[in-house]
Amino acid sequence: MGCEDIEKVLKRCAQVDLLSHASVLAWERGALLHLKGAALCFRPNGVEIRCGLCNQPADYYRWVDDLNVVVFRCRVETDEHTIANVPRKWAISLLTTGDNLEVVEASLGRCRSILTRVAV
Ligand SMILES: [Zn+2]
Picture 1 (cartoon, rainbow, N blue to C red):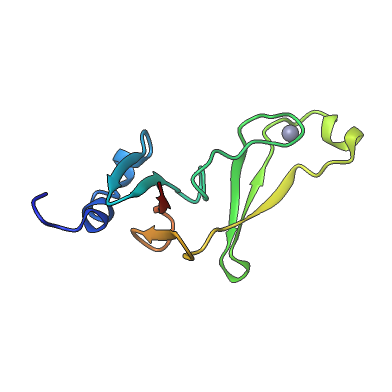
Picture 2 (cartoon, rainbow, N blue to C red):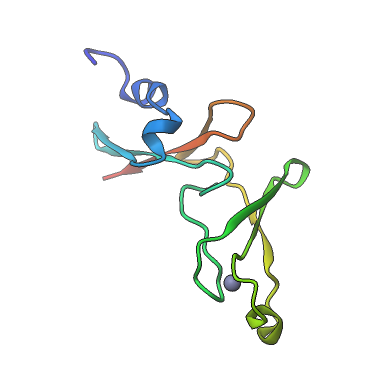
């Protein structure tokens, strides 16, 4: 990497095929950089989406760009949700770039990754 800025290098390696299986950690001048995949359909904020009732991995339902949310749906089709009065669909608010967090979007916002910087 030579003298190149490590943050630039990490953003360049923010490829879907790499980050769908692993995240990248780097340490630079007292800060820990963490690059993780955040594909809209699977883990839009960098973490897997699971149903709060069944704890099953959720299925992507739709992206509501205007509201900056992604709607997920529970895979379980039994009456469990009806009985517990818990909806089978729910919205996840998308993280946006802010302090110590940058959303790196590869194409049309769907193939995102998230770069965080934590002082250590
Ligand atoms: Zn469920």
